[in-house]
Amino acid sequence: MELVNVKSLPALAKESPVLQSCVCFSLVVSAALRLLSDGHFTFVLTLSALLQCFGFWLLLHQIKANRSCTGVSTRMLEMFVLSLLFRLSSTLIMDGYLPVDRSGDHVYQAADIGSLLLCCQLLWCCLRTYSSTYEREYDTMEVWRCVPVACLLGAALHGNMNKSWFYDTTWTIGMHLDTIALLPQYWLFVKKGNFVGRVGNFVACIVGSRALAFLFWWTAHKGLKPRKKDGGGPNVAGYLVLASHGLQLLLSLDFVYHYARGWLQKGRVLQGSSYDV
Image (cartoon, rainbow, N blue to C red; front, top):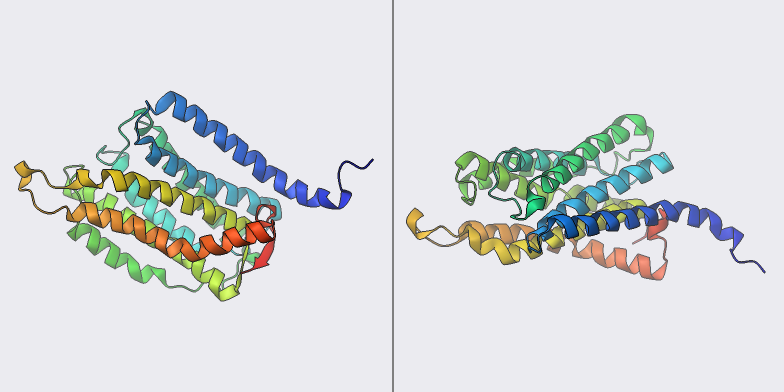
């Protein structure tokens, strides 16, 4: 009796590393939740950073396995690098926007540092190692035009959790850049008319990360309201943070729909193959 279909072995071989990675990630999260969360809700923010880092690792692993960066937007990666640099310039020095449990002492920042290093390595793979597979003709969105606007908006409207104009501004700029970071990738998907499964898995991790961050700020945005001793006033910064994270999810709805449909109908997302959207 044949227990395994021989024809399915190549697909299983491609899918297995992804599933193994998901299992390992789940174990890491479970350990961190048990040892570092202190049962506090703010661990959701750390989980968001960990899921983002996992997404970048998964993309890098699959690019190297396939020796191809087809379907990956380097402009997206550049925006993530810039966003992470701005955020880390605040969270590595100040603690105003960090989770209050023990995961905010080192794990949260380590996840962002890991994401930054992985982004840099991904850029190297796309522009150097596997540059012949990089699809420049599709990666054309001029997202850099939005950077000055994000910087001005962050400088003009920001919270006061760090009690420092500079560090509150850099964190807020990082948040705004994070909001638009995925746009070049979505643009590439639209121009091609299809997306590669391994890139879809990565984007799904990032969208999941943003959903967790939105969940956290939905609860915590009230903490950004100016205190009475500081003059009081409306919670402009809090609503701006909530709107920024909500916009990230709204911009991702079309991708989520096609990703879920492709996974349910064709079951090939985890196998790193391409399918039309």
